[in-house]
Amino acid sequence: MRIFICLLLVMIALFPFANDIYHMLAMPMLKSLPAGGQMIATGVVTPFFVPMKVALLTAFMISLPYSLYQIWAFVAPGLFTHERRLIGPMVFASTLLFLCGMVFAYCLVLPVVFGFIAQTAPEGVAVMTDISKYLDFAMGLFIAFGLAFEVPVAVVVLVTANIVSVAALREARPYVVVGAFVLGAIFTPPDIVSQFMLAIPLLVLYEAGILVANVMQHYRSGNSSVKSSQFHPLDEQKF
Image 1: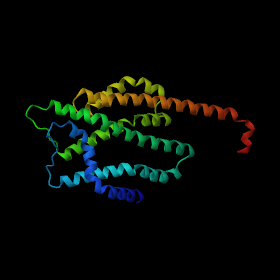
Image 2: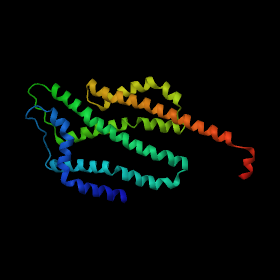
Image 3: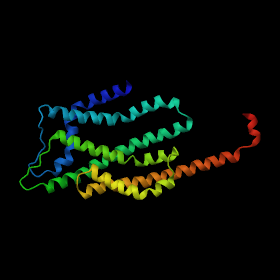
Image 4: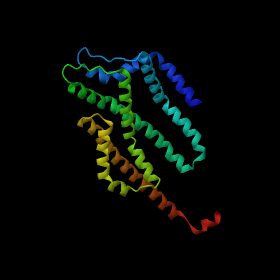
């Protein structure tokens, strides 16, 4: 209920600015259109509902830290101390990385994609995108890049949970390279630039995740050795 109330309040606060928020979202497309080009709305109620959807999604992103805090407060009492120490930073890092992925897609990928589309349009064809279809396309890219930027968190979780080892992740590099470019081909338009713009960050973040997981693994092993060296047989009587 608290999450829903917070989302509703933020949505109400953003309601008067819904059209401005959509205009800001559509700027990468509008800048790439030729002179006199514009976006269109083919549905009767599309001009009203599409900005409302954008405002709702913006409200969701703004209220996300509070929502994650509420989820954390609900789950934390049932976790061990070491689990609480791990999950808190992971939730923060995953939220920050997802937002970074969306910003990367908005600032770099969308202008390149729409510039490519506008330049490759056949002569005599007016590029005028429906605002609803544009929203679906942009949100698809936002989700794809947001999830791609979650790779370091996934790597650290897998290593911390002892599901895979750092050595196994290093050995899987050739497969990760192929998989990154396959994902780039699937989730981006058919141009080599946008494919590289998804694959290269994914590979860099994969290596960053391996580096962080390796550091955490050495830190945990060091703490374990210190604790074992401090243990004395007489301490068993205290238990």
